[in-house]
Length: 86
Image (cartoon, rainbow, N blue to C red; front, top):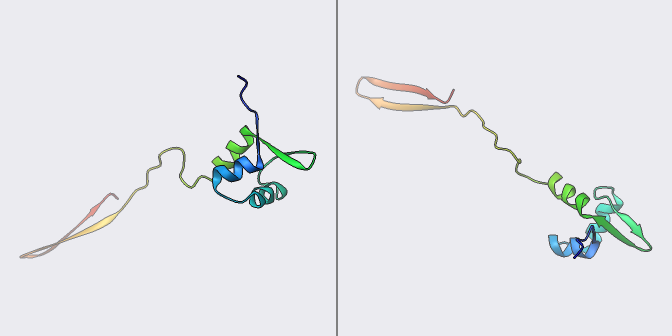
């Protein structure tokens, strides 16, 4: 069985839970590349995947960030302040 290379506006809308009109708007605004066949649009699966990937809110690779905080420990003779993670 041959794998589909293109997906319809309706398929994308149903998949993302948005309206067909919103998907067409993305296409008109050149945010989502598409081919116009007659009066309908078709989107290559590769382009749809790139579109989704470009809107990801979480990076693909793990990133680390230094976190610095001060710890205040009261003692009988005063306070001890130490720094972590700097």
